[in-house]
Every structure is written in C-alpha cells, then in structure tokens.
Length: 192
Image (tube, one colour):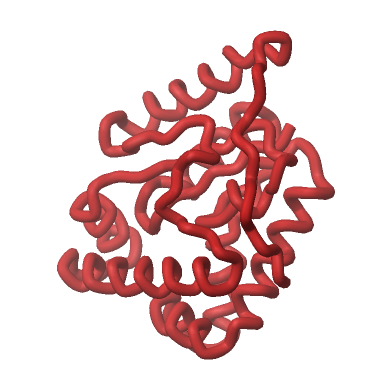
C-alpha cells in the first residue's frame, strides 16, 4: 500500500503521516525532513532555501526525483510532501490533502519553531508563493488543484488523536471491489 499525504506548511502533514504510518504498520518518508536536511547542509532556513531553490531548479528536481522514485518503487509507505500526491502518479492507493486556515498553520509553525506567530505567517506565505511558482514552472502543476486527491481535510476541525482515527477509518473502509477508479494524474511533466 502507498498512501500520500500532501498539504501546505503547518497543515499537520508530518504529525498525521507519522501517526498513520504507525497505526497501519507502514514506513513513513517525509519530503519535508529531506528538504530541511538539504537546507541545513547549506546553512539556510527552509524559507531561505525555498527562495534559493527559485534560482537553482536542480534542488527541487533532486528532491522530487527521490520522492517520485520512492512512490513508484516502494510499497507499504506513507509518503509525505507538498507534491507527494502528484509525484506518486497513479501508484498511490490513497492521496490525502491536509490544510487549515493560515492563522492556525502559522500558530503551529510558530510553536514548533519557537518564533513569533506574525513572523511564522509571513514566512509561510512567502514560502507557499515560492513553491507555487516553482511547481507550475517546473512540472506544470497547479498545487491548488485538489481534484487528484481522494480526500481533503481541514485538520483544524479535529484534535490530532481524533483526526488520526478519521484517517485510519478512511483507509479501513476501503474495499477494492467497490473502487470505481481514482483520479488520474494528467498534464504533468516529470522533468527531473
């Protein structure tokens, strides 16, 4: 089974993807962890690294190639990244999108990173604009197009424990015999 978890910064991707992987006995691979490691290797914050990536397309392509390879060659994985749903092509069994109001996401990021909420919000908005631009330019992906996802959730509506219950119940309720087909990934150029 391959499950992808995507969404903007602070939407609960990492927390819930790790919890879902644990609950289902799957591996968890985080694109965000890989990206942050790449940023730290260059002594940059994720925001600085995002903006640097605008000038060096190979950064995104290297990360995305790795994630695409994981999605197309491994099983029993919860793959989590902003583009995981898109990068998995038709290999994903489930594609989840998580989101929350930007004010909530900024609070979560501020708490996690120990910074003021207004700074977290400004950085998050800059980061999202940077990523939106690059995804369109590199792969012709409109990150705002949620039509490829099997389910989209506002994670601010549930406590983390209850939301994990929702995710596990969604996966448990799946019956391949009732599956009439997932949304195809079309028009994407995987130019790694």
